[in-house]
Every structure is written in structure tokens, then in C-alpha cells.
Length: 163
Image (tube, rainbow, N blue to C red):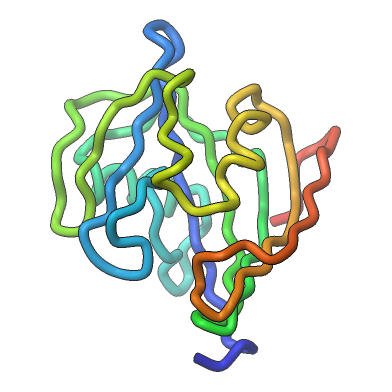
């Protein structure tokens, strides 16, 4: 893929604070098949990232999220898949029961038992602070295989990240 091709992605991370759990999806197809992430998909042309966060939760897990806080913006680069800008949203309120979709098998995990070993390499670096509502921006560079993290920068912010 041409490394100058930019894609815009949104990841909706759903947290249920009272029981202390997080909703992750096991990818059934695509680049992250066999890996867990938050609810992740591309932003559609003309769609605002926050509206995409609501849509993605509905389409991938069958739930409605009441509110989403944009806490982080990251750039991902790999020769395997080019450049992607990703907006990270935290949803702490939802309705409905998570259900399997064509691309994702949603599963609840205790926050202290997040399966980082079965997730993209960058997640262990930023999820802990993100789950504490820390605002961030950063960049993650992956190797030719698209899975090995080569380098990264991560900056904590006092104000909302750039959109």
C-alpha cells in the first residue's frame, strides 16, 4: 500500500466503571484478525469522528453509547498498510447487550485483566493512562509486518487533543 494514503479511523472504548470492566472486540477478519481492540473502524466520507464512534459501537457490538469523550489522537504508520490517523473515544455509558457482528466478537474483561498480549503492540503503552481519562497524542511506527512496533512518541495533554 502507498504510505502516503491516509485513512481516518475511530476506536470506541467502552468502559463499565461500576463493575470495573472494558468491552473489547476479537477481530474475526482483516489486519487484526485474532487480536482484541476497542470497537474500531474507518470514518466514512463526510462523517464526524464522534458520530463515527456512536455508529461503530452500534454496528460492531449492537450497543448504544450515550456519550463519548475524545481523549486521544494517534498517527499509525507501517509499510504494510500506510498511514492512519486514529481518534480514540472513551464511552462510560451504554445500553443494550453486546452481541457478535460479522467482523467482531465483543467480550467484557476486568480492567485489571486486559489481554495486552492478544492486542496490537501499542495498546499496552496508552490504554492504562487513557482509562484514567488522560488526554494524549502520539505516533506509532510499525515494521513491514504491520504488527511489530518499531518506535513511538506519546505526549500527555492538558487540553483536548487535536481533531
